[in-house]
Image (cartoon, rainbow, N blue to C red):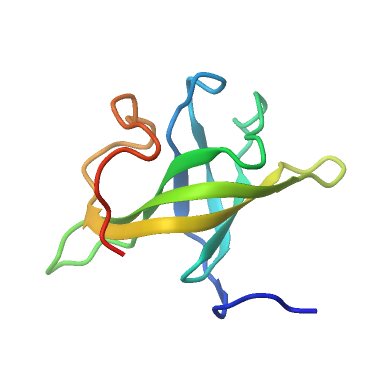
Length: 125
């Protein structure tokens, strides 16, 4: 049974999860698919540390392709981890339910989230 509220788009974009106490380096990977309400991320080879916990609220930033008119943008999300899975010998996948999202300037290199806390700030829906 398909319980999805929004259609998913197969799209490969760089994705970063802000650090938290259990993962001071954060996570980086690539989106497998994305919808209005969710993101599936495949973690990169550098994600050997602590996996996120189901129910954990995190800050996720998805890089968008650069546009010559608008410059570099990203999708900045507050999201909840809903599933973490791993197949034998493969990097793990993390499924997020998006609580809030906004499009913003992409000014941070991959892992400069040190001053961002999940759930902080006002996000238009």
